[in-house]
Length: 638
Image (cartoon, rainbow, N blue to C red; front, side, top):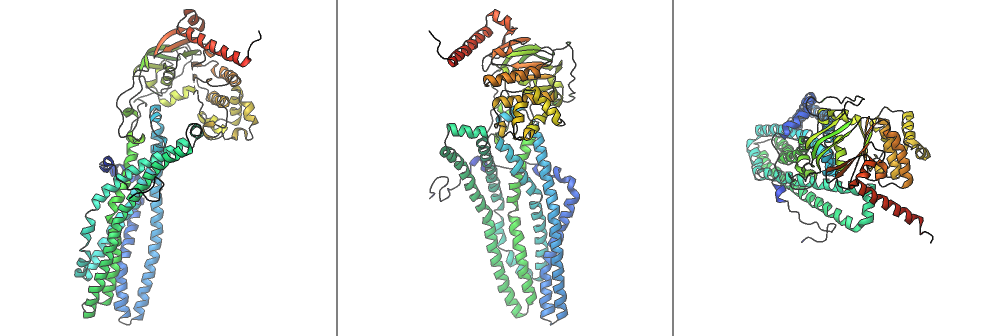
């Protein structure tokens, strides 16, 4: 009877999920893996040759033992004994050197495979659209680059070595044993089928358990990723409790533990059985062989050699009986890698895509949306169920976010998009930088459809500053140079100066070498925004998209950020998403989005005069701001 909770003293019994137990490896998995190692054919050939030599030497040792006993000790031939002892010592030296060379080559092949797979998966994931990252669990992706890649390495190195070495050893040993006594050999092997036949069934069970174990490990990694960063830790401290979080973590960790116990029991069952068979077989050889040696049918050397061969036979047979388990376990990892690589980005360069050509002048608007309808893709179009820890993904798309939206941003001027929350403002800006493609209609930059140009050239031309400026856990220098790696320190300080950020960076003990912390949380919101604007200025893109860049800032920080934005937008084609309408009064034109449609367009004064949605939003916000100012000022004198 199981006792206690997830951390109790006795393990709970583990029942395999029926859906997982039917897991099968897709055909062609090994063939695809071979594509990653075939460039190492020479090393693989040498590796297999070294394994064969080692197996041959191992199989020849008992024959030397027989000669030492029968032709040396029994015959009183001292010279023979010394000579054969030298052969054994030489064989040991050769085996040791061969093992070292084998390990070196194996490491080079295996680590090379890990490097190639990790780079391939990393590059592929980097190319995925924003919708992919909006859905998938970070921990699950990390698991693919970590544990799954190492599992693929085992398939090529340790599993291959096990199969080749043990197969050759078994063949060599059986041939040698039969040549000495086929009767004893047959008797020693008669029990093997009883334990070898169920191996295939165990292999399927282990593969299923491994698949679920990897999924649960990814869940654990996701939990730690979310809770161990600054924002997640703060959220837990403010809204949850250590006891609740510990219980949630322990529940998943306990299942991983229970699966591990079950996995270990399945894996050890055959090893225990084969050890038992080997012990019985040794007893048979000593019993029957000893009787035959007493009668003079066999020599003592043959009995010793047969016994030594049994120890060399049952070890490889035990390993081979479990090799399907090892192969299935490794192939589950390989299959999970292919699963990610086979998911094609929903937003990618079209065949024949060309570089974006930015030409100054007013022949074409800098940005234009024409008849754009958009709804976010279905989960099944952009993600994988295994990366979201669900059984399957929905193929149903959400409703329309943008409906027949058309507007233009002339070259060198600023156009603003405003409207209520959820109106589609951010979505429209994401289409400009091609984080998503429109469902219907076209998005053009410099007169060119964004789907006809390369993503790299588009992203070089468009700079984005979002509401929550993200900084990597790195130095200020590294975060600034993200879009321009060749920038000098002088370039960085110039960009910081123009972004109104020189003062606070100079006050930091390490200056540009200051580490900003996870997501930049060692800095205030205004400081992070000014670093982001400096990064934009350093990149110097001709087109700028600002998405609520001054939201949630205090008055002092907002004023500093506005001064930085004035520098960043000067002379550039700019699309500004704004919540505070006071920030867009100087815009060349303002588009008002409501429920995914352009409700109004015009200048600030024109929209106020129209007395429509913009005017209502402006009045509401103006009154709210004045009420807040009155509250800060205190009660007025009578």
